[in-house]
Image (cartoon, rainbow, N blue to C red; front, side, top):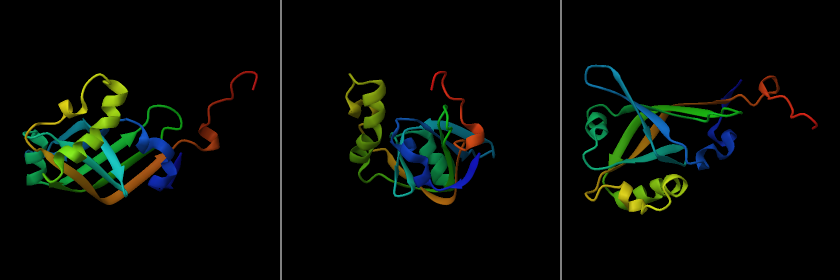
Length: 150
């Protein structure tokens, strides 16, 4: 396992339409985790919540969050970012389209991307990193064996 990597060491992980998981605290102290679509811009996760999403109120009450993005195939690249979420309604539809487009094109290409956004402005959110941890399993000890005949 390679530890201590930077986000730039994770190659095209951020370009893939792969859901990340956000974890936030509920008022009773339990952890609430849900998948989110995102973009990784200038070292920060940017994501959107449609109007009325329960996560908006939870993050307004306590903006601390953790986001985990990991792949499920070798080399198992991953990033965990812990920090505070800042939210704004400004640019919701424009930014939301940018976030949703790669996922809709990959998994629901016959649907208009705007169908995945609320008509009323929701929130654009950005996780300000306090702790960023990146790792993968690309070291020699974890490499899969070569294919027969290669």
